[in-house]
Amino acid sequence: MNETTGQEDPERREYLQERRLAIDAEGEVSTSFDKAMLTLSAGALALSITFIHQVAPAPRLMWLLLLSWLGFSLTLLATLVSFLLSQASLRRYREIMDNRYEGKVDDERNTPATWTKALNIASIALFTTGAALLVAFCFLNLAR
Image: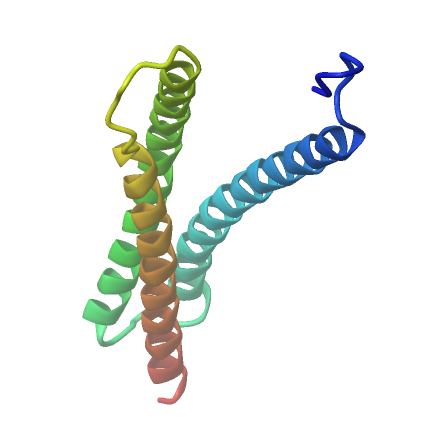
């Protein structure tokens, strides 16, 4: 706020508006990421089951498929847990902001946010591993 006129600085107002847009966009991207991971993992599981029934009814190297399913299942689990941790992260962020506003000294670590990020990275790695194993399984069963 401009102390001489009592009005908010237009440059600061513009900064805050841009910041709010960036925060909103980050939330939308995060939601899209989570939905994509859930959809892709569930779809890959369904596709692999269809492949077995339709294309390779007597598959070999089933361990590849089982590891693929494990990767997709763990992707789903990591994504769902990250939803809960994301909520906890937002609650913690509010606490941090409230404490700053009230002038309280507080540990500003946001452990749920750190875990959410780690789970998102893990879900990408698990999905990629599951997909690679599924492709290998399909290729080796079609190459007969």
